[in-house]
Image (cartoon, rainbow, N blue to C red; front, side):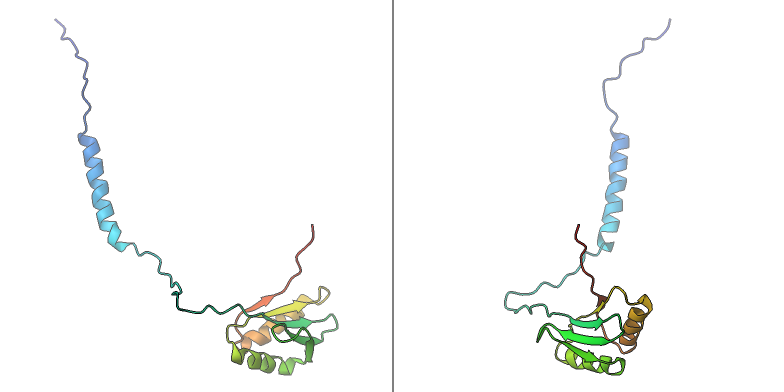
Length: 137
């Protein structure tokens, strides 16, 4: 006489409970190890400084250097390589957060631009970038 197979109509939840307990333990152990990102928000009483226009070091195709400070005037002042760093340091003495951008003519050799960047980096001038004209599509 063969035994009759009965249809099992109950769900076995023991493996599900085991998995959930393991996950709970993993998250309880890992939660104290996670450091949320810390950001410094300005308070209401603080006055936010407006961004300062960057100093422009203009390098023409004939290798002549000029400095333009748009915060004070739009005129470019001619400088030579020897006094370039001195002029920038004097301008940044009042505002150390002021950036310096190099605006080179597109016909200037890349090597000349790198020389200017090297001079500035050797003299601890911070925030040096390149100025480019956006292309018109």
